[in-house]
Length: 211
Image 1 (cartoon, helix red, strand yellow):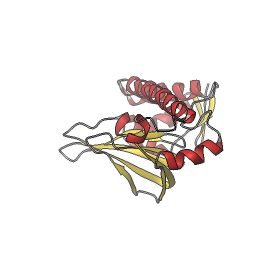
Image 2 (tube, one colour):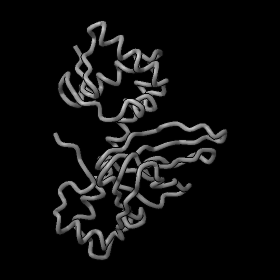
Image 3 (cartoon, helix red, strand yellow):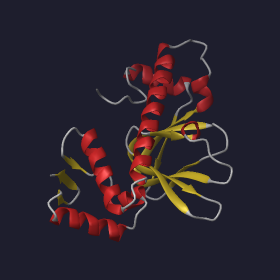
């Protein structure tokens, strides 16, 4: 079953009409440029059309944590993670990215034309929220492992399961993976080397295989 995107089951012609109806706008960003800073209210939704980005959280002491890795067709914004008063959330581009912004108010308010694609978009959005919640639950499980090795294996098994096979391409850089797992990059690379030497995995660049 293919993953639902924001525009699943909506024709290209309907999408063009939606851009006007929903007040959508596109924007492009360069590497490390801030795409969105979350407000303490639901204002807008972002859809990553092209590229990659990372959602970060910064606490009141200035410590920064990676919350999520965003790829093409990922959605983000306050409706998906209403910020805590003491924390600052923002999305940062990883390389060149293209983003489509939609005002949240346009999503929840029924347009005068009662467009069919409006209901379909809301349905898609709810399914994407459910999928994102499932991904976050999976990450919590990975982070709850009590060693770097166990975190790595839990993550690799999860990715292998998503790809329905033991061989796969790592969907992020090793630096981003270390952030995602909340581990030291050097320690993570040592464990990956050990896992390969012990015959548990095969690794060639970002191509991995669980043996």
